[in-house]
Length: 462
RNA sequence: GGCCUCGUGGCGGAGUGGCUACGCAGAGGACUGCAAAUCCUUGUACUCCGGUUCGAAUCCGGACGAGGCCUCCA
Image (cartoon, rainbow, N blue to C red; front, side, top):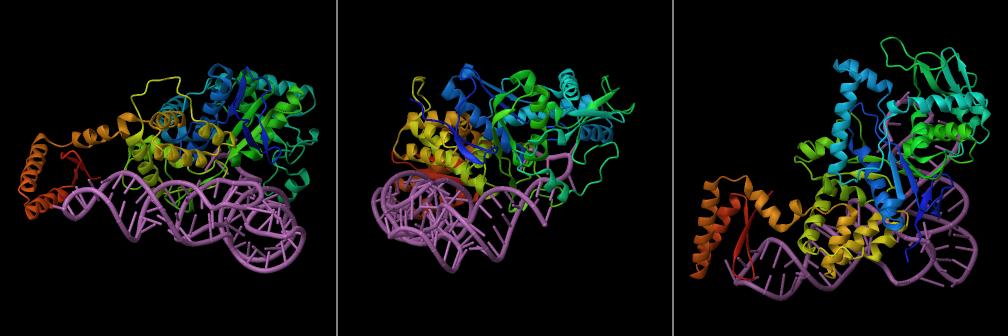
């Protein structure tokens, strides 16, 4: 008997038992990247968090009974600006950025979503939604634009819990003259000749920011679905406006039943920003030594991310990555990689922890417990499930050969000769000579281990 | 100004009314010629002030502090 999944719902600000609309097809939508630049480490958080949720849902409801949609937004004014700046076409920019993004998420151990729809392939659905909104009196065309009429929706502001009055009081932006209400937002806008555009009933134009998610979730998940996820900064205005568009277009009370939002990320105690120089992309962490003077395996980034509950703010530090790596190394030393018993159950302690609103910190604690109590097969299963198992990289044998791989044959011979000399000295109980050789090797970065069986193994110190 | 989070031991980080996780670092021990690695044991905490309660880190009120959103930034 599976435990009940409980998730914190931003809509109600409480932890609720999860009940899918259709257990035969649990449906989840997560806001994906706008492909104008490489994804940064803050972008990695929702990717990892909702991947864990996807894995859990598949475990609870069956692999064939979960549909996970994560979009690619490939039409946006930031894209246009960046392409112009770099002197390449929009298509070149979005293709290149998407390619890197796909490599990044894979390295982070994320399963591919069931569908990764692209905004540019859903223009027809966007137009259809806009037409419905106009027909039902929730939108109006003005000056080449189509705008959503916010006051036409009494429930507007439900998700972010702000009233129209509050927002007006805090407004500090100029209101475009063609807007009826100052909170009305753009569904469609006209494109100049040099801007990407599509023919529409309102002339050649392009979609506003929020409409693509309403269109893609509708196409792939239906008018209403179970879970909608994203970063907490998307609550307002993005998700609030998605709700307005979808609920009014389809005359539904809700767009998604459960809204989940991950907390923000800081880098070494400071907000990540280009001006502070602490802006770091996933690609840089994986492939360069920009952060902490070395590159980091995706599994380390993933585990470091999961140490903190997804709704808490997280401070991204070198120390946290080092600790995550130390944990992974220790676990891989003890996991039973040879077990091929697929019937091995995922330990209940892991499932139970995840069912408590994705308590991944508790999961990690339970993995430590499995490790300590010597449950090597359950340990492997848990690591695999969490997406941090990498035998080729973290197993003891792999590490030794990997680190030695770069050395010249000459150096290797030298090291082995010294070790043999030391073994001879030890056999003769010449401790002074033995320690001298060990120090000499240490100076070369070689760490010796005299194992119980009398053999001496060595590793390179990082 | 409005709305919303959050304040736990040296550090990271769970926990939502009684039983004081877990990891890293530290300390002690085992093993070792000595080490390293490994294993075992272990100390230290709930921002402050009121209130509710037999009992509060956990609930309520207030203060102070930190962060986020209200500007197409996850």
